[in-house]
Length: 40
Picture 1: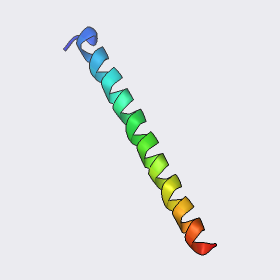
Picture 2 (picture 1 turned 120 degrees about the vertical axis):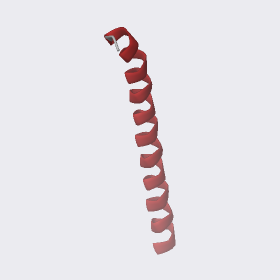
Picture 3 (picture 1 turned 180 degrees about the vertical axis):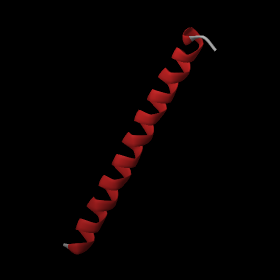
Picture 4 (picture 1 turned 30 degrees about the vertical axis):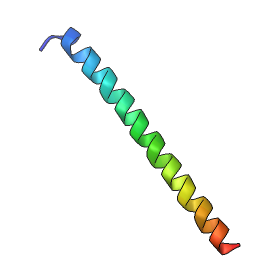
């Protein structure tokens, strides 16, 4: 495995990690918003 072979994989992994974290963040925000609406 040469560094040139690893670069695209790491870029994809970074994009997937960013996507996953953003999706989880949105999910948490939606859950909190729903809980606040229920409490009102």
